[in-house]
Image 1 (cartoon, rainbow, N blue to C red):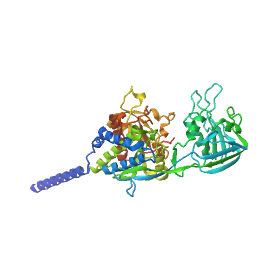
Image 2 (image 1 turned 90 degrees about the vertical axis):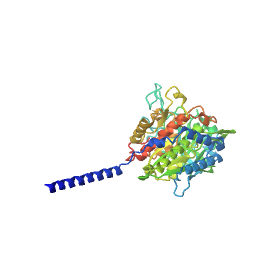
Image 3 (image 1 turned 60 degrees about the vertical axis):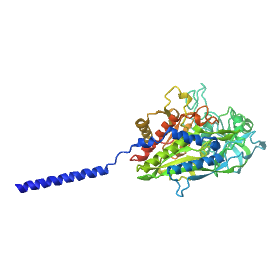
Image 4 (image 1 turned 180 degrees about the vertical axis):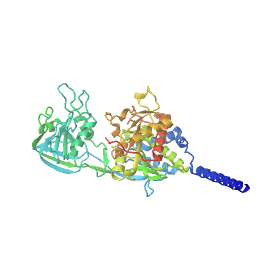
Length: 519
């Protein structure tokens, strides 16, 4: 009996010891949840204000791409990342990604049709930068409105490959005055002032046209004034187009087709046309700034947080400081980088890597981001999980003044990934409760904001994006866009929202799923 008791007692002690050890192991393996608000709270309006008053000061001369002020800006960004302990993204330790650009000066062009000479600027104007070359044609293909749509197609049974194509502005209407494509009194993108230039060009180019002559008499005078001067328009070096694209006046258009204003019928026009084009572009050197925090578990998967570093420079002796556009986004990226750097220092760094990308040349045509995505991505685009792009988040849209001022416009969050959209919504509900306004997210938004900031170069490569934007205001692209007009409490809130969203994307178990077709 005593022996049995001893055995039972020993067994009980062994069980107790085993249970204790099990609990100890479990306690060791369970990591205390990270208090992410600790890092978000390092993003303060005071620090944002201090940084922005420096970055959007006259000292930086408006940060025009390729100019001395832009060089000051990139040096400031590099030095700030260094002070935060955020390393360079490039393996050689250089924070700068050189971006080769060129100023697309007015080309030297001559065009003649059936022996009649027409004058550059007076009769036609080049609206893209094209390669130097000569084109001789014995016919011109008239493609009416130049539309290819499910409801209407000018290119049916029309071969335009390698040919000169003549098109005109607008779109067809029914006898009752409604538009044929929409079936309503509301025009489609094919008549929209901003959209039809690109839409009609892209269709003709995709079909192999060698040159496009676009007849748009309502805007010719304005366009010839814009494109007929040395305006400082830029493009990526060596990126001149193989196709020629001209806006032409009535005299040149009618020399090809006399009744072009009323004639919508596609046809081939026999003629003798000669085009001689000399590209007069000049080289410019600029830089993106790229800093990087390596992920702890999935370092090869990259979350990009971006803002453009440039603005309009100096015009007529006035400095265009660009405090909101995009000084606000730039200092937001810096503060987010500092917050992630502190988390990493505490042993709570993100599971996925974070690339902090300040891009140049946005005001010149999204050039810095295009260089990154199309020419020299520092990290493979296939490994890029998402792009959170910040462009103007320091002000209030006058159209919203009677509504909740604690808002932000979100554009693109649901266009490629339901995951990203849901994470964005959940992060906001959990941490910030900002009014998320999707007004400009509509596919038919006439402002086309989805296509007008740097996120688009990621989106076109099937990478999920969110564009954070406060809307325009009277100081947009004016010398009056100064740091004293920034609403720093809103800038703080919006920056923290981007940080929380990036935190959730970077630390979730699964990579974002791309489950939608890009536009």
